[in-house]
Each structure stands twice: as structure tokens, then as C-alpha cells.
Amino acid sequence: MSDPAMSDRALADRAPLALAAPVAGPPGAPVLVLGNSLGTSAEVWDRQVPALTEKFTLVRYELPGHGGSGARPGPYTIAELGTGVLALLDALGVERAGYCGISLGGMIGMWLAANAPSRIAALGLVCTAAHLPPAGDWRERAARVRTAGMASISAAVISRWFTPAYVALAPPVVAGFRAGLEGTDPEGYAGCCEAIADMDLRPDLPAITAPALVIAGADDPATPPAYGAAIASGIGGARLEVIPGAAHLAAVSAPDAVTAALTDHLLTVAVSDAAWRDGR
Image (cartoon, rainbow, N blue to C red; front, side, top):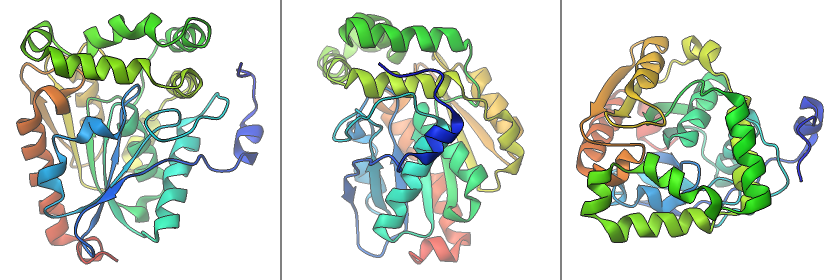
């Protein structure tokens, strides 16, 4: 059981989180980091990988307790998760990378772009938020999975990830994501919930200078388009694109639209950012 009263100092004193990260793509290509969403693994990006690996070397890290990443006792913070990504980049010898993140992965991306701006060349923020209250709901969810397990929340989570129309259209896909959610380590999931509970990145948005594309699902009940609009208005020069018919996992249910938007944005930035384009 984690201690919600754990001090910021205690969090700061912990070693960076060790995050698993499958790497794929052409050697020497610009590095693109992909951050998964709460309750999913690196597989949430599978539909984007074929197009992105044509131009980028992908580093698909996984949140604590998700996919191949181990979990240590929470709570976590967004800063702690972001520091784990920086430690991963250091270990790989990557000085500058593009970054795309879904939901919690996007929150981590905003923290990175504001707090380590020289490391982030471009941002793709998919179905995410800079602030996601009420905090009590996240703490309640964390407590629930610790005591009752992941299956206790899976039906409610799936209803936010996919529209009813997509559930009817692709039951095997939905079943696979439900199985992945239920296989997530409860402590890792809970610690990530607590990071979201304490998160408020709104003051950080004006400090972000990396070119940013914000993508929202028109039918996303978890982070509706208004949340994406708030991010886009807070980051100078950011652009918002709303995907029709998509719920929270828009990258899964509307892959072509998400892939096209991200690829166009990233390639445009790479043209003007020589340090990133040349893999430096």
C-alpha cells in the first residue's frame, strides 16, 4: 500500500523509474519517443508504427507496471515519470527527440517540453489534458485497483476508450485491450492514477516552445475536445485537430486520421530542426 503523504523530498530521493522501451526504426534517423496511455502498453501505438518507422527511430516506453515495465510502490508524480523518460534517453545516448503521447503519455510530454526544452524537438499530444480533476476520483480509483484488482474497473474504462459503434465493429480489438488493461500491475496503475490526481500542468504550458499538435477525439468522454482546446490555447503556435467519431483511444479506433496528422506534423518540424533531423 502506498503512502499518500509521501513527501516531495522522498519522491525526489528515489532513483529514476526504470521504463521498458522497445526500439525500432532506421539507424541514424531522428528519434521519436512514444508514450502510452494509462492501462495500455506500447501496443497502443501499433497502428502508427509502420508509417512512423519509415522516417523515425521509435522509442516506445511503457509506464510503470504496464507492458514490460516493472512497478515499484506509488504514488508517482508527473515529474517522476518524466524524469524516468529523461533517464531512458540518457541511457540510449539521445540528446534530442520528438515526443508523442496518449493521455498520461501526453501529460508526461508536456512536462518534458516545459522542463527539459532542449531535449524535445516536437510534440504530438493525443487525447490528453493539462489538468484532470477531481483528484478524489483518481485516488478512489487507485484504492479500488489495489484492493479489488484491475477487473473491477475494466468495464468502465473500456466505455471511455471506445465508442459503442467501435465496440460493435471490432470486438476482438476491444477484447484485446480489455485483457491488457486487466493484466496491468495494480500498483503501477494506482501510482499513475495518483500522479494524475496531483497534476496541474496549466502553468507550464506557456513555457513550451516545441511545435505542438494537439489531437482530440470528438466523442472522448475522458478528455473531451475542450481539454485539447485548452492545451492548444496555452501553448504558443499549437494546433488542435479533432477526430470525428473517436473516443479516448483515437489512435486505435481512428488510426489513419491520427497517423496522417502526426506524420505531417513531425515531418514538417524535422525539415526545420537540423539537430533533430540529423539524429544529433
